[in-house]
Length: 502
Image 1 (cartoon, rainbow, N blue to C red):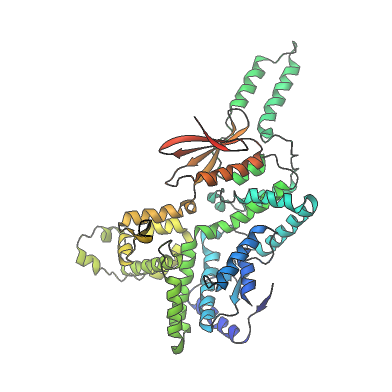
Image 2 (image 1 turned 120 degrees about the horizontal axis):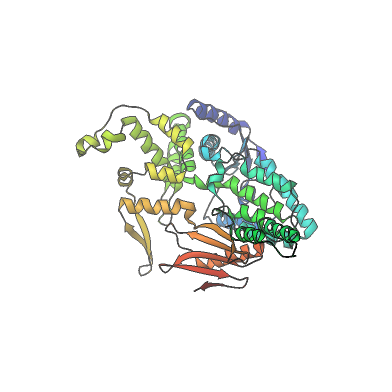
């Protein structure tokens, strides 16, 4: 990678902003800034910010899209910061000096969030080395088994990287322990049964009792025991972490379990960033705004800052802007806790004039926003602090595309509808929640998945592709129960096509 450490004027600016961030109470691991050209930052962005990753076509595809976006003036990456200790941040060499200042202040906000937010507590802070080691291991598997076969298996697994369980983030090093266990275990041969661990015990018990029978037939006790074990539900509880379930129970060839464990560990590393996009970007934007306007900007830089900051905060008709929603919510929380606009007395006040002028001079705003940045993710952030007063002050409404006019038009101004739409987009990132309900469906070793319907319908085209990939790993038919046209429907994938069963 063509990166260089910052020096001269940039180093002086960095030291000044570092001290400003500390003075404001931000707490972070050491931040190492490096400067690179746009081609290098595109490579880094395509690889999730890490210089060394395993080889895969999707990184090349992402790089191509980023490069074309920059060439055609459609997008520009100003910075990139990585959740590690030390925390690495990359500055674009072509940035104007004002942009470099904004970026540095923004990075310190991110670094504080990474270190202190509860959802990031379990992440591996040495992931720079871990990612490089993962790349080395997967390259070795490619040398052993062929690049095409390994890359094809990676394709199957990557299609499942969203089918993991966010609650595992609070299991101390649970994901890493799973990786370590896989490295030490004997990997099952390709012919092994995915239900071997559960059913072989019953078979062995059956054979043992059969041998003990003087007539050469199994005893009634043995019959009852094998029947009970066969009827026992597996898994006992629905498994939301589908990657983990397949990792331990699918008939994986040698090396495949290790590759799946690697990809699962990386999926969990990136999960907190996906769960806190609004909060994280809002927090970084809040602090770059304060540091720049109160400490860093010179008189001749104010116009440039205002122009660039406004560009970042611009709202879109097609999707929410996490920078804008995040920064404004933090500001609103700070204002409310400074003036005491929360709690029973305030909420039960029916006098609009009193409510508009409410101010107890509580001055707990800064304390509250630091508390919130430590405890919440995006769903909790929106659910608790996205109030009707905030929605009305920000003049928020939802857009909808009108095919007749060919334009996006205002669809709804109702607060509850707007909030519900935001929450539905954030719940599981707007993607369906899928669990494994039965791994021996109809006593045929088939998988039965269930779509937990929380307002997000199943896209049948994507579902068919995902079931195909699960079938490639499980090697038996896969079924899924979902709601389709207001009815519960069971779809069956037999390795060739997905079709409903009646």
